[in-house]
Length: 231
Ligand SMILES: [Zn+2]
Image (cartoon, rainbow, N blue to C red; front, side, top):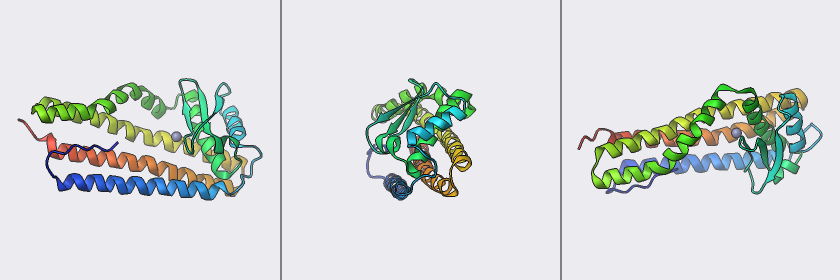
């Protein structure tokens, strides 16, 4: 979610955009290559990603969760609104370490929901607030800058900060879902499954870390540029 508010040339702004671009591209490249590598290794557990996720859900006491397919690559997610794992075709049908790891990570989210895991509940509670904040902060900032209203600029920074808090709260939720997936695979699969799942899920977590760092950097920039203005 980069922002492109040009108000004269600002080298600090250019640095923020470049660092965000490099971090984001590096994280995306790392997850793609790690995923590709472990897509070629068969998991030691019989069944596809969907099958193994189903077993993990049953073990975790989340039997009422649905599993369906979704188009695209690495589009996998758990949607609490329909209480369903949406697995990309490759992971739904595939039996590789990568497929099983991603499917079990999503099952981990469904189990977090079923068990009322604290950070998961906090993140869910923030969703409605944050979707408004994410969509409106840039417009509020532009309006504040062009109308020269300090109150609007400060409101924009508060809205952006809410989105940053959300990204930070997302981190323990993601790490916990991966921890659950790795624990399940290490108990049921081979040592190779555990190693591969750990690599794939760590790479996936790094994309969230990169996104959170980028947003934090943007927040620091916004505070530095607009935070002290009292005109
Ligand atoms: Zn996740």
